[in-house]
Amino acid sequence: MEKWLGVSGVVLILVLGWTVWDASQEEWEHYQQIYYREAVRLAQKRAQMEWATHLRTEIRQLQLNGQTIVERCVTCHLGYDNPAFQDFVAPLRTHSAILKSHSEERFGCVVCHGGEGRAVSTLEAHGQGEITAKPMLKGKYMQAACYNCHGLKTLPPQATASVVHGRQLVNQYLCLGCHKIDGEGGEEGPDLSTVGSHRTWLWIYAHTARPQGVVSGSTMPVFSLGRDEIQDITIYLMTLLDGRDRVRYLPLLAKRVVREPPADPPSASRRRDDPESRAVASQIAYHYDGKKLFQGAGCSLCHTIDIRGGEVGPALTYIGRKRNAENLERLLKNPEDILPGGKMPQLYLNDLQIKELARYLSMRQ
Image (cartoon, rainbow, N blue to C red; front, side):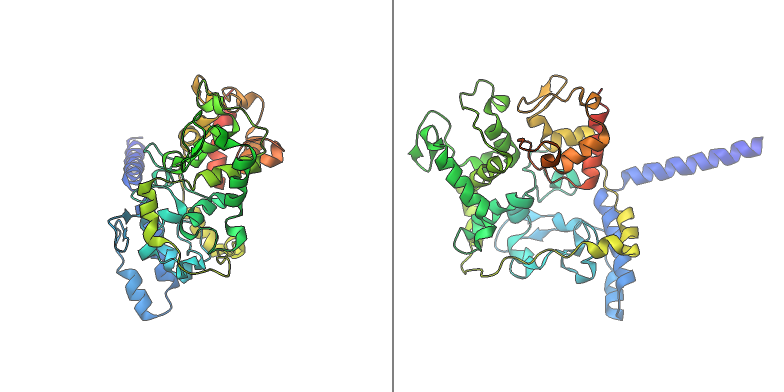
């Protein structure tokens, strides 16, 4: 009996010790260790093997050319310039071919993707944590970033189509009757000339959908806008920047016409079918908390839980009584599938974020 108690005690100590060690390890350290291990496995030449075996676990950063800006995205996204990792999952996956014309040393990451470049944790870097940072731009919302450097004349029309349509909608709905943009318009509402610098796309979207749900007592009317129209107006307004942000983009302004659209990112088909890639993907474990994600992903701008949150959309205090986790996952993945013609935006969450957020909401009963 004493022998078994002793063995159990040793096992318990080992488990507790491993748990403490694992909790103390930074998220980025875990990604780097996986990257280095895979780099050694993929090495085909002796020089590559020596390079891979001498890599150090450390915070990495880009010092942008001619500027004082520091970005640490490459601390986790180590494979961004390594073609051997084009079939891996994020954050190890190789960046798309657009890096050939958009050098990371000159442009960095935030100018295109948004987020907080100095952070070294997923939630904070992607603008979903507790620090004040703009959320990452994904999907069509990246058109705002493209436009800020390229304008309308140096890109194919489809690359800025949402910006153009959004501006047309602003004129069609006579927004300048109440708001000023670059000195022109009315004075009933706030000046929108620099709204893209001072509001996130989530806030602009929510306010456009239902102003009184975001700003109590707002006199702005609720327009009969669909999901795509609200999205395009939001993208256009995100291009309206203040002087500081315009100066930031100034050294990056495109000076030549781009005749071809940017190359598509590497195909994901091999990543799904390759056993080795799946094995690596299983080791890259993001950790999300559904409750924190509800705040960080911007859900609380439109929805209340208990007495906290916005009033753009319905209250979700007891949403678990109406929708189960599977239904919520479908809603978060593609709002149009569950709420056709509704106003809920596409949040571009990854599968694990959707799963954790749906699990949290389904428990609200």
